[in-house]
Image (tube, rainbow, N blue to C red):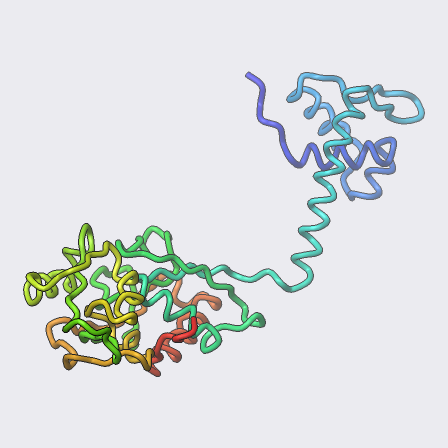
Length: 286
């Protein structure tokens, strides 16, 4: 069975091919000529092809060697680009942040409050109603509605979320608007159950995602529940109930215990916590 091709063998072959022999390649790479000769032979064995003709004045590439050299020059250019990128100081940790639809939009609308292009990390936002697994590193930070219970997770409380019922300030003629209900998965969420239990007979329109209801409410066609950080952001909406106690939840940032002290994660958590503790609203123009 052929062994897998060693990337180091390829790199050293490239040096030998460019230098035209072992001596020049040894001077350039700092690897002895004897070792270089063994690595070239090993590469030929792994590829099952002769790459060089060994002559008194050095190595002459075979047709297969010249063909391989063309491919390796592309690889060498890519390696140089990566080195330049790394040395430029722009290698930054990508922090994956998951939250529900509304909260993800809240983060994006208020991104200037916790991130800038000069930060040592960059955000990746993942809308996630099913709580991706922090423990398995599917995400780095989760915005959750309760304290993490697993010992391998860490959490920081950053506030709470309240819901109230809203309708448009200006309702079209023709009587009071009905209600928007939730179907499919969101029908089983606390907000979906509250709507069904309290206004199920008054539901006119149904949606399978609460974010779809906002435009309908603003047009005056219906009423529905909204997080107060959403509803209060729109001057054309009014609350028609006080915040509903049974729907109040905490807001937590959750991360893995092993990752919480990693600099980029720590900086991201700190910045997010600072922003969320200010109880920001959505941007109505977002």
